[in-house]
Image (cartoon, rainbow, N blue to C red; front, side, top):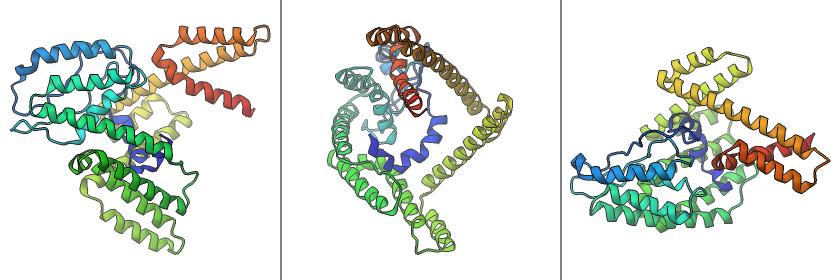
Length: 345
């Protein structure tokens, strides 16, 4: 999905979500999965047996995937009359399971979502959610076709901004072809507002006819047009980005773990600081394993005594011995980068 870099809401908010969304890299399997309550006013025991079965099913299915050890994301809100309430949390729940595509066959992933809906909702919300999911899957297929037809921009010059607008218009049209206007607003309303804001901001910044003071005045006026919740997210994203830059600079300068933790704790609180500390440790452990593998791989590929087939067989054995199937999918990118670095030297 190369062209999706034009969706600025995703790229600019990613740093915030990276730190505060549930971690989905491989972790130890929890003894339970948190299933969010979805039915407002419904007795908790009504689906207790079904939810117990669902938990067992998900634990079994997710035990060897990138979702291992995570809580099921999102909700299926229901009103007092038993109707599904359209919300961005529904999209989050759909995407939680759809993120396993590539680890499970497509039909199995789709069935997983349908089972989740059926076990968590009663009529009429169940049928409404199933129909909404079918529409969402159709939209995802159409989105893939659209992405295949679009060319990723090479730079951020003003003519590309116009292309961004055209492509975003196409994206919005596809959304409305497959989803109701209410569903589009619930699923993508925030993103669309933020995309418009970022494109307008880029247009002002690239307007060569404006002086620096005029640009600043127009940017300030543009900021005032943001709805409160969007502005709040933008402010939080900027704050997270600033702290991230500070801590990365500290790492480069040789700051110790305690100093970095202190900065994060002051900015985000103890719980988030502890999560970030654990994430740093996890990344460091992963990188050490990758570096060790790449060094051994390089030695194998440099051994002139072996034939190319023998080299490849040994590398494959090394991969299998060093990484799980899920980890091997992540490993390929590091191998490509290592090969590119070797080619450049």
